[in-house]
Image (cartoon, rainbow, N blue to C red; front, top):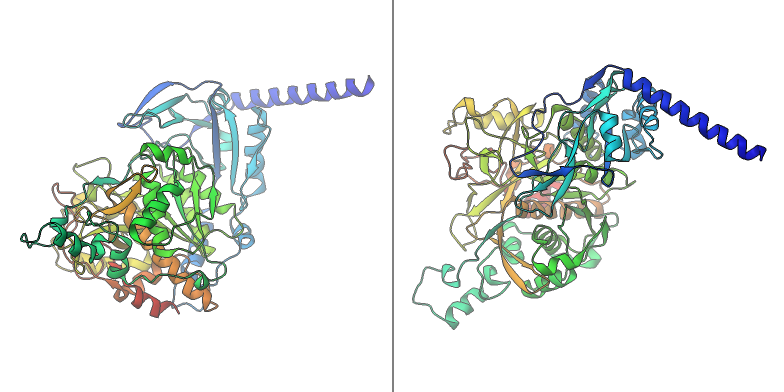
Length: 590
């Protein structure tokens, strides 16, 4: 009885202490976090209901770094990613990253004490000790952050639902001084499937209208554009092999330690039936997913979903299989959840392809972008390459045509490789490519032009090309894309979907990105086989070796509305340095 009494007394004392702490925090002055965010909603989203106790919210508390600390870490990253440096490829270990970027103990303690006071029983910390994670019921989060939460539903895809803040959130002043921002509270994700495109008729392959029936089918069957089925003239693995010189790997060719990954979000799953159907149609080995981080509900694919995920997996697999492939799945459309999953691993996959983004101005605070950039720098410093699709609305972004261009994030981050889109200059004819008019590109309004691309950007701006009015863009910003690949609607990509029962054509930089990622996964394979390190953060290498890319010099990324950036000789904000030439790149990396 005495022991039980002591336990009860101790529990009561703890509860009283937590209540006292909660009251202390309630009495403190509050600081509004991410003050630049003014919109709590979106034109594609509507409030379904007020969040309640049945809704749990996973929060990420990103702790602040000093400007000097980040500048020093950036210098280390750029030095080790610079092929001209004696330190090239000498990537940091996870322990070395932690040593450089761990938050001060008092910052960690301040956040943990706040969360404990509001009833949090489990508070996790990332390996680098600068992000704290907690999951709490929505009503507790509302009290903790002095905000109101709602369940938002997407207007086009009502099954997509997320819990987000419906108004500004706040922290007690004693804690806010240590915290950059709290995610996932504000950002509503982009939900854009790849662009569906009717596959060209067989008669589009050649202009000779005298060919009919079996003659046309034979001609198409002999063409790489028809290699996934005689009725379709599309971008296929055989087209990409021929256009970019990407070789086919054997199982025995795969170097120890090589790996690649794609990121998928809410309801974007994959199924073996579609992967098998794609391989059977296109004459490739069936892609196998070696590891799935998160869940995979394959039955969803039978009702016609999963096209984004299948596009990613079918093409990164067709171009780089059997390099081990991982799929990262986040049910919440969370970029933070995705990067957190990567950085939890002692040895993350070496190449990541992500078809995800938002306009910089869409609920994306500077604090958010800077903290995400820090995560990208960590990954790059460990020898990881991260590639993002540049978007499918040209210079106008998801906000649409206006008085200014709308740059993309994360494609506009200085610490990732942005992949733009091209089209064949002549339908169904290998060779010359032109800008896909809807391929994303431009200049960041938030981040300055980094040193590794300064000469290329200056060259473009001074080239004499017809530029848009200066009021439309920030000529001193980080410019993107860095590279490009086929992604437009002239010849869309062939995909298998619907549980293996259907096929169709899709377009978008979400097709371009996994193709370019597969090229760098293969280049890593060559380096690892030769006893060298992975390529890691790619951009200094890319900008020092522009001749290893097929220059695209025609077209404009105005999304067929108003003005945009025109392609020209050398780097441009329509197609970057151009499309990959595997043989030239191979000669540089081994």
